[in-house]
Every structure is written in structure tokens, then in C-alpha cells.
Image 1: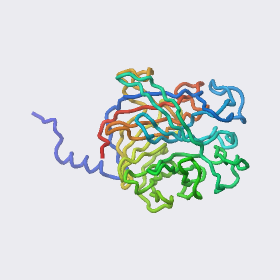
Image 2: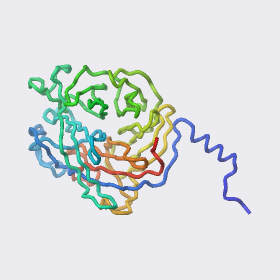
Image 3: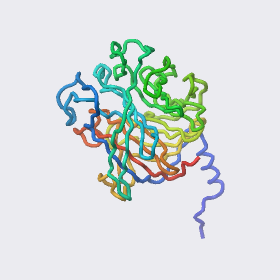
Image 4: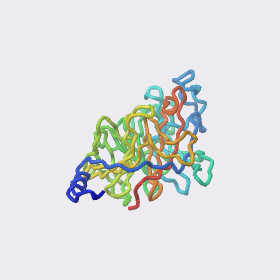
Amino acid sequence: MRSGRLPIRLLVFFTLLMMLPGAVSAQGNAQLIGYAVLPAGTVTDGSPAGQALSGTVNGLSLPFSSQPLGSVTGVVPGDYPGVWMVLVSGTFQNPSQSADFLIRIYTVQIDFRNANGGTGSANPVDWLALSDPKKFLANIALGSTRSRTLTGADLTPRAFVRLPDGTFWVADERGNQLMHFDQQGKLIAAPMPVGSAVAGLSMTPNGGHLIVALGNGQFVGADPSSGEVLSTFGTYPLSGTKIGGISMISDSEALVIEIDGKDGATGVKHVYLADINSGSKNDLVDLLKIDDPNGLSGIGSPFTFPYAAINGIARMSDNSILVVNNNRVPYGQGRQPGTADSTEYIQVQVGQSLAR
């Protein structure tokens, strides 16, 4: 009788294969266990935005009467359970249209719809605007104002972290630099260059390093006190794809969003667990194939996350993660062509422990 067990030599071979740099192992389908939506047309207080635009785009009338809460490029835990802080890019497709779209960090209360109930809502409860009152930056759009608030005409913020002292580091994709802001969102030092094509930013749990992901897949470490680049780690393998965002869960492991940059429920939209030293990666979630047995999304199962830009990611528990899309307000239309995408907050249970 033949045994169903693999010969020892084959087991050793497959084990060694998965240890190679760039190797990928697969998990079973992840499960949607929390779902919340912030509608595409959500605006907050402030001055009108998008005055360089007009008409109707994907069902939204432009310009906006006040500041839109969309184009989320990063998410970090807030001060209380259920509260998160999100960074918005302040960009309407290109900088020339974005001189009145303020770059803000919002505090959002999320009431996930889950198996026990919940409204499925995400509500902004506070915000702070990033600004440069000490004039570290030249030629900003609102440079003649007292506050010198920063807009999408000045920067393209790609990700952020919050330090224990309440200050923020923001990764600017346009200038390929790190920028340090105080608790009120004021720039407190000149930006620090970090290389080229900034794609993500996180911090090691021990607080020892800021970890920057570059567009070529390379990880570099920077000093959390100064932003100075201190070290170079491994290179994350990419093949016609790009890094959407990262979140460190240990001193050497990162959750990495890998995307193809295209709207629609095809192509590559995955979350990997990567070793930043070796470059190896383990497939955690296919974002186009998430089980939704409880019907939390109302969209169907498998649930898909079909967005061109997915930047926000964080560990929520030992076996679940939070993922947030960048709806590129009002231009994203990954969920339904011709309809502006909402911002969706999804809690996904993964097939392996994230406890460290």
C-alpha cells in the first residue's frame, strides 16, 4: 500500500526552496471579519477644495464645498479602541489641481460590521492640518498665509508613523524625503532625503528604526529622532508590481501590500508577510479572494478589494489585519465603473499567527 506521506528527501527539498530569497508560500483564503465604509462624497469643515475642477466626475459634483476626506495613504492606531488616525494625500490626480486640497491627519472612529453586529460606519471625529510655519519649505501654495498649511500642490504624502511622543514622520513621495511634524502638525525640521521613489513607511516595534520601502523594493532604516538613513536591509522581490504600503510587526518582518496599480478585480492585489533582511515573502491575503461567509460587505463571497491604490495597512490582532484603500477621490472607480469609490476599512483574519 502506498503511503500518502512525502518522502523525506522531498520534504527537505521543499523546505530549502521556501528559504530562498524571494520565495513565496501560499495560505488558504483569508476571511472578512470586519467591514466599514466612509462614503466617497464625505467632506469635513474647511475651505472649498477642487476649485481647479468642475462638472461631475464619477457621480461627484466638483468643486467640493469644503475639504473631502478621501485619498487615504496611511493608517496608524489612535489613542482608544476603535479609533484610528489616517493621512490623506491632498492630491486631485496631479499637483496643479491640488492647491486647495489640504493635507490632513484625521482621527476616525470605526464601528466595524462584524458577526456580532456593528453599523459598518467610519466617522471623522478630529483632524489636524500639516503646516510649515517656520518656513523650512520654499514656494508652497499657501506660503503667503500665516499658517502656511500644506496642500497637494506641495507634497505627495505616501505614508506616516506616529512616535510615542505624539509627533509624526511623513514620507513624501514627490520629494523622496522624510518630514517630521509635531503633535499639532507643524513641520519642526528640514526634510531628510531617503533615496528614490518612496513607497512606504513604518517603524519597528522597539522604536529603533523607521523603515522606508523604496520603489525598487529596497528597505532602508532611518533614525527616528533625525530621519537620517542609517542602514540598508534586503530587497523585496517585485515583478511588474509595486509596493502599496508596509507595516512592521517585528524588527525584521513587515506586512507588505503588493499591487498592480490598476482598478478592477483582476491582476495582483495581495498582502505578504516579508522578511526585510532576506527578501523572502509569505502570501497572507489575496485581496481579490477573501471569504465573506457572514455577508458583512453585502457584496458577495468571495469579497474583492479591487483598487488601483491600496496604501493603508496595520496589524489589528494576533491573527487579523486592517487594510484601507486610497480612493483617489473623485477618480477611483475600482468597485463600480462610473461611480466614485468610497474608502473601505476591512478587518481580515489571516491564516497564520502574527504574534511576535
